[in-house]
Structures are given as structure tokens and as C-alpha cells.
Image 1 (tube, helix red, strand yellow):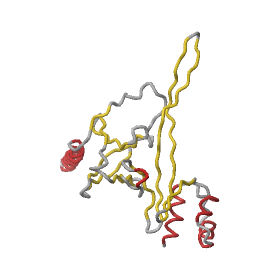
Image 2 (cartoon, rainbow, N blue to C red):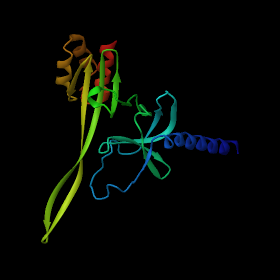
Image 3 (cartoon, rainbow, N blue to C red):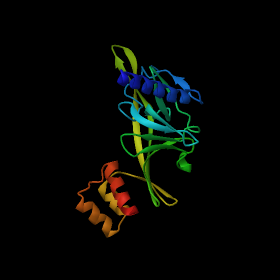
Image 4 (cartoon, helix red, strand yellow):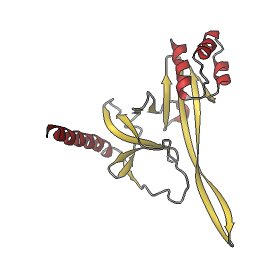
Length: 210
């Protein structure tokens, strides 16, 4: 009985926390608004558990979010609906599956947008921006012209070193060229890193910061 009561209280607390988001510059979103477009504009295949921080630093936990790269906005799942997060009121959203966080106005070049920050050190910062557009093409089918639409998502990774910002590819040769110190290449070789994933590049940046 106590266990059931605790579950009910946990659910009520979760709904109360999400209600805080609904009441502040959020708007309902139609889940069927892309029914005529193939593919998905979302960054993640499924909704991700996350902690949302408001501008005062207060944490709102037990939320489910996804990033809509077409709308350039974070969406929060609420019951059977979805709301769009207002970046000015919620400048940080951290994923629970790893140490990455969405940060609003993280870099002047992307003012008014969320960046997904994978690593933030004293001298080096690694973040990514994902954009989505709708590609259209026409095909003829038995004398009829049919327009086919599909989402095309592109993620660009950026390495910031001091005031310098550079778009990079997750490739071993490119990363090592950015950090020619012999100790870095030795670390990469010793750990058999291919540097083709965010996780491996973050390991290198953490080593450099140390």
C-alpha cells in the first residue's frame, strides 16, 4: 500500500513540475503537423529523459524532451500533448543519458537558439547545431504529378578554443591536426580511439584540459 502511495505522489510531483513549464511562455503543438512530410525533424529517435533549468537555476526533473531541428526548438512531452520550450526562460536542458546539455544563446553566432553542448572546459568547448529542411521533388504517376516531401537533417559540430570557432568533422586526422601536441596523439593511440564519435572526441578534450 505504501509503495502504491509513493508512486501516486511521484506522479503528482512530476505533473506539478511540468505544469510549471506550461504556465510560462509555452504553446501547444499539433503532433500531426508533419503528416505530409516523410521522415522526422527530430534529433532523437525517441523522447529523452531530461532535467530542465529555468533562468533562476531551479531544476525541473522527470521531463521527456526532444529537439525539433525544423522549428529550432526543444519540445517537452506533456501527457498526450507537446509544448515548445521558451529558451529565454529555460536556458539549460540536460540529458540524463550522458553529460550533454542544450544551452540557449551559448554562442553569439547562434543567438536565439539552443546548442547541444557536449564538452565545456576552460580552454575548449565542443557543441553541435542540427538543422532540418524540407526537400521537395515531383514524380509523374499515370499522368498525375505527385509532390514528395521529406525532411533532411544536418548536424554540424563546432570546436571553440578561446575566441576562435571552427566547424569540424569527427575524423581522427582532422582532430589530431587541431591538436598537434605529441602527447595527444600518444593518448589517442594508447586508447585506440578512432575519433569518429562525440564520446571519443570528448575524451581527448578532457585529457587536453587536464
